[in-house]
Length: 149
Image (cartoon, rainbow, N blue to C red; front, top):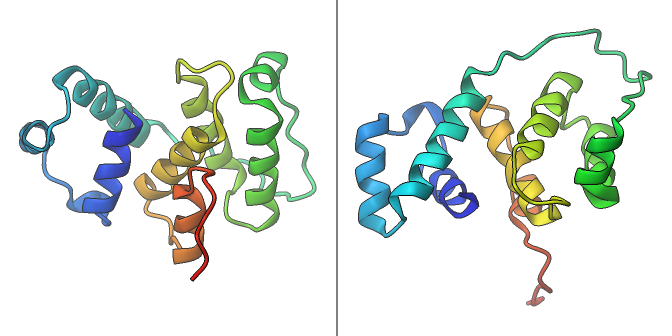
């Protein structure tokens, strides 16, 4: 599913410009993705777009207390990454909640940071947030060492 989501982001920078579901399924299948994985990814993405963003007070002094299940599944790396994004004003509280919900839907236990970053990217992309190139690079970083030029 993650590979399909990355492919969609790389090929359709504007979320609203992606083809309708039927045409998109054909394109993804033609590229070589499995039909079952395509269905899972597109359902996840459709659910994400349909999920309401609950606007609450945007008080940056507020503290989000994570449930024990969220702490266990997300782990220290993912929770620290959320804190980093919030401190950089890249992830408002309403979108943070979508990120947590989206990550909790994954089968992984704990959720690997590389997959978590893709979830963050998909949520920001689907909500048509401005994505600076350095942020996109960080979110697409899989943790492998980079070769400096």
